[in-house]
Amino acid sequence: MSTPRWRLILNGKSAGNDDLREAVGHWRDRGVQLEVRVTWEDGDAERYVAEAIDHGVDVIVAAGGDGTLSAVAETLAHRDEPAGALPSLALVPMGTANDFATAAGIPVEPQEAFALIAGGTPRPMDLLRVDADGKPWWCANLASGGFGTQVTVETDAGLKKMLGGLAYVITGIAKLGRIEPITARLSGPDFQWEGGFIALGIGNGRQAGGGQQLCPQALIDDGLLDVTVVPELDGEVAATLGQMLTGGKEAALERVATRAQLPWLQIDAPQPLTLNLDGEPVQARSFRIECVPGRVRMHLPEECVLLSGR
Image (cartoon, rainbow, N blue to C red):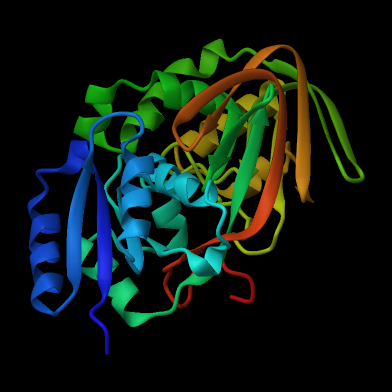
C-alpha cells in the first residue's frame, strides 16, 4: 500500500493553533506524509495547489474559513484536468463563522476533521462559476448580496476575533435601521424577478454571515443553484430580518422570500452592486452565475445533509 500524501494549505491567521499542530503530528505518526504550506499573500493558494499536484499529492486540505476553502477550490477549478484526475479536497474549519463546515457537519476539531479524510471516499461537489462584468470568479459555498453582504464586509476584524460569529449578529442589528434596497433584474430558465431587494443568496451551500440560512434547501451535488431573494424593506421584512439575526426559524424567511432552483442565473443592475463570494466582495453591474457540477471531489461526513439522497 502506498503512503498517503496530504498537503495542508493553512491560512496564515491560524498558523499558531496548537490543536492543529498536534493533529498534524498525530497523522504523521500514523504514516501519512503530511506537509504544511502557510498562505501569506494573494497567489499563495494557487502556487501551493500547483506544487501539490506536481508532487503527486492525494489530498489537499484547506485549513481556514469559507474564504480559504473557496480559494483552494478555485485553484483546482482553474485546472484543465477533470476532477477525478486532481487531488481530492478536505477542510479543517478554522474561520470566524465556518458556515460551510457547520452546514456540512464537518467537525471543528482538527483531529476529527483529518479523520474524515482517512475514513471515507471523497464525493463529487459542485462549484459556482461567476462572471462579473467579464471577469471570472469561483465560489464554493454561497454568493450573497444586499444586507448580508453589508454585514459581512463591515464587521470589524477585531470584533470577529473576539466574538466569532456573534460579531455578525451585533453588526447586523446595528444596521437594521439603515438598510437600503438594491434594484436589479434576475433571470434564468423559466425565472424572472425584478425590483428592489435587501438580501440575496445564491447557494451551493446553505448559509453565510455567521449562520444565516439564506438557502436552506441547497445541495452541493445536484447541479443547481438555490436562489433566495428578500424584497425591499417593509414592516414584515424588517421583522423577518430581526428574527434571522437573533436566531429565528427559517419559516419566517419563507413568508417574504422568492426562491428558485436554477442551473444558471443572470443579474443585471443599473448601478454597480456587490456580491460576497465566500468573503470576497466583488462589484459589478452584470453577473452570470453558473453551477458547475462535480468540479471537485470533497471529503464529507457520511450523513452530510448537503448531499442528495441524504
